[in-house]
Image 1 (cartoon, rainbow, N blue to C red):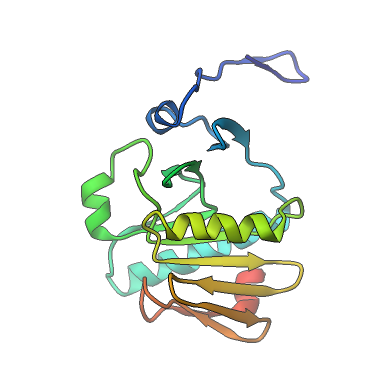
Image 2: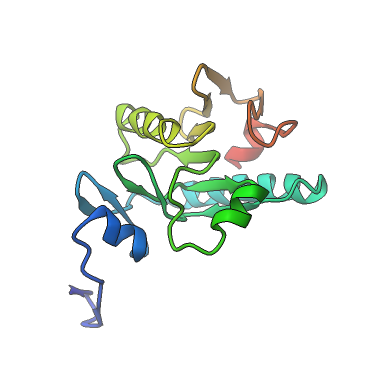
Length: 184
């Protein structure tokens, strides 16, 4: 049981394993190193960038009739954890296959993670590698304060700075946006 400052009691289902998390993922939580961990560090800037990426990817798939869906904070399984990417794109084929499951049983093909003030860069790059080892084809790591975007695939890491145009490498081919537009 979690108790808030306002004495409201909120019930959280008992999660004892990754399988429990996959079946019933609690809102705002990830399953990391065999325990529930609350996602923290969300700032106004983080939320704005998350919305900008969601809007950009969604507008692109709508205008090109590419299909698929864009999500925020949606649960997926990696080879060892239960994660909630900040923004994720699911291809039409995977929507047809997994569109109604509580947790995607693999990483999303395209993911964006926005660095929070509490994140350690090393941890973020390890998380990106975890996603790539679990079905993700491309991940965008967005660093708001330094105004950098790294695009990682299984065989390359590309860096973009303010003023540059960042583009997808393997998923949503043809999509590009100026880094400054993502950063607000």
